[in-house]
Length: 385
Image (cartoon, rainbow, N blue to C red; front, top):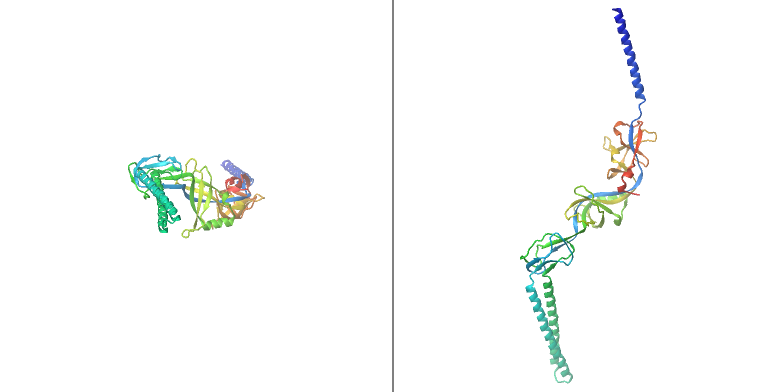
């Protein structure tokens, strides 16, 4: 009995000693654990082009509604719907019989007026000779000269009537006023059309280049321009994104800006032009354009994943100091630029911004930093310099 008790006491003591040894070993291992690893970006200053993303719709650079200038029956359609035409190409034919007859009548009237003028000129010359010999009176001469002038005026009227008849006859062939792509025909052979009718026969649109009209807040434009140097219009290369999110392969330019602020909306109308050789952009299509606004000199671009918010909603970031400790910075952010924030205050060139591993660190903690490509390298498409 006593032997059994002694054995139990020895076993308990041995277990206690083992537990103490294991605890000491764990404490030693914990105390020698390496600092947590974080991923950092070393920030650099660069000139950044600020851009604005604005919605808009595609417009044809030129558009002409084709209407008849004379009345008559359509006898022929001479174009294929939806196909390109050149300025001056024949589109429709109107029955020209009556207009050809009017032209013939005008030619006959001109010939008659010219004959009357010739007769009046001969009579005026004869009366001048008679008057020079005092054979006739001055009144008779004046009447002959007046008749000659009236006949000359009648010739001019007849010539104008003939010109008008020729124009009307030419207008029986309806031609394309501009080069472009035709729409659907709104009439057919046998239809009666009238001069200047409200309904267009078809519409021609020039699709290369195309315009994109967008509006921008005047206040926002002023704010961005004050924040940086304004761009020259000739240097404003504009990119376009389609409704499906794809980037359009051709860059555009700012062609004009309305020198007027809309009183109702407080916006300015901007007109952009884009090459469209494949006619991929069609009028009415919804797009989003990215328009350069200003250049910020020596700007700091901070990756958005490295910026968080404190309890009051203010932007903050954590950086690794030269001593490899974590430091919190309060930031003053101007705006976003793609996947980055344009930081006005709080970060400096050379700061190592923590972008990964934020969940396992705290201010003052010692960390091990691993470098990632710099923010300005990743933002190259939106930066200058």
